[in-house]
Amino acid sequence: MLFNSQAFLIFASLFFLFWPWFRQTNALRWGYLIVASFIFYGWWDYRYLLLLIAIGMIDFFAALGMVARPRQRHLLLSLSIASNLGILFSFKYLLFAAENLTLAASWFGFDGSLVDQVPKFMWTVPVGISFYTFQSMSYTIDVFTGQLKPTRNILHYFAYLSLFPQLMAGPIVRASDLLPQLLTARKSTREDQWEGLRLIAHGFFKKVVVADTLATLVSAAFAQQTTQGSGLYWWVISLAFTIQIYCDFSGYSDIARGLGKWMGYEIMVNFNHPYTATSMQDFWNRWHISLTSWFRDYIYYPLVRRNLEQIRSGAAWVGQWRMLVILWITMLASGLWHGAAWHFVLWGAAHALFLSIEILTRWPLHLKKWPGGRWLAWMLTMLQVVAAMFIFRAESMDQIGVILTKMFLFQDGLKLGIGSIITMRDLLVLSILIGIMIMRELYFFIQGEQLLKKFGMHSWVRGPFVVAAILILSIYLRAPKAEFIYFQF
Image (tube, rainbow, N blue to C red; front, top):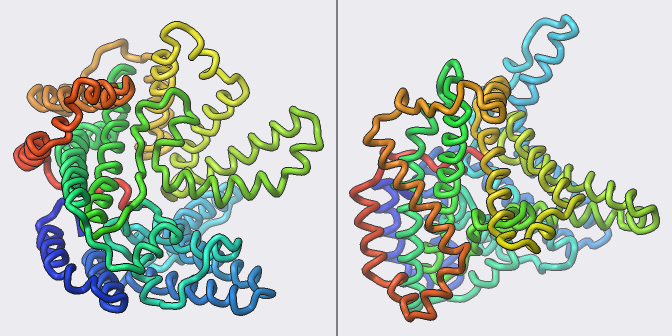
């Protein structure tokens, strides 16, 4: 079920109509959340609810087993992680693995295809499987490490795992944050209700006006059979997609947080103005925070701790080399998490390279000492982000090669040549939208909120007239409905 659909409007209206009554007791509250969330998820394809239930059952009982049988907790954690990753691999990566093994076998003269051996129902990636799998795994890992006590009520656990606002595209909420909130009949305050409305309004504007409008241009560009256009053309397309994916994904997160506030729950901030970053490390501290922190806490830090003795005991360059290897492992895994395709791995490698150069040279720190250095650091950071973003969106590795050559060798001159895929009217609209989003990020970059507070205008910007204008624009300027990009992950 899409947030930007009539079905969701009816669903949400009915949910919040009965929510004040059902939230009164734990059993009613958890049961109501589970039923509503299952309807929300099952609207897409009810059969894949079995995967959500299976993953939840495995991790719920594994966590209880770790407490009841401490000596077997390593085995139970291993079984839990293997089950989760096994399910994720089967539905997200098995077809990809079969295609690549078939290709590799053909190089050695073997005929036949392994693709036909993959069951047809595994050819479709269930919506949100990467999100709820990682969310469930974090629960058992936290119980294993002693950071969290497991809940003994299965309804409590499934209310956490399947909570519908963030079920399909995050944020990846930690059990330590949400499980305690679900223990009480939290009533949203007027401030919560207003902030929730403001977040939902902003989220819908980002999605249905900006992201879906830009999608028209971006999809047409990447769908070309032969990659046309100049280097300038592809820089513009990459910039358009950079803004599209941010508005699409952060729009979903804003709506999810707004719905959470209406329910009385705090869902974590997933984007903290990433396009104001002045280094790639700063960017990853602001972009898709729930996933970045997941890889940091469950892959990067454990690998660092495992290699800590070697990192400290060897020469400085040996320790730095080991840290960079761990960074590359983490970023490549992050790239692969996004999808079963080599271009996602390449995108992760590009960011690993940018981060490695930054760590080795410490260039952002040097730049910021110069006059205007913060602005220069910001521009160079955004140049790297935009330069890598077309890799994320590309249809194939061959397409990446062609576009890469055009962008960095400026083939075909500086002719924009965008009129072949978009009308001048739509181009004007797109230019305005791109300008709005750039100005919005610059507003936060120059700390515009503090300036407005100084002149007493901060409350006006966040007031009812602005929210009403955003809602009106979302209705009258909405583009053709499209799924959220991160549903495919």
